[in-house]
Length: 145
Image (cartoon, rainbow, N blue to C red; front, side):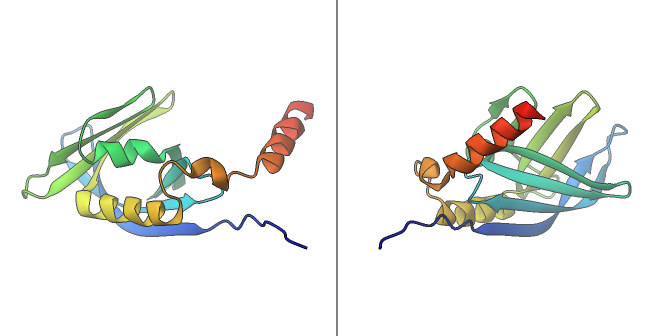
């Protein structure tokens, strides 16, 4: 008997990002970029702050497109740039009712992460990696709770 099994693959990349402070300075923040093929359209950036972990999940293609051109609408904006040392960077602006954050990371790190994520799930094939039955069950469970 033939069976098809959806197997999720996960990717994590630890790095340090520059958090832009209101006083104009920056602080290095340990961060983890993660990607899970069971949620193929999204990635998560998790900041390790003194108060605990702060995760943000947003569209994978925002980071991918933001490597070469300004992109984003709403809560997340991403654009390329160059830091004070002349290194190519990508800036990510995150906005919420609880506050805003602007972080900057090296383009080489972001590009390497995106390439690895795209090796797991190629752009345009994301829907093949969705477990729609599990998604419908989760929605129904949430609606009845």
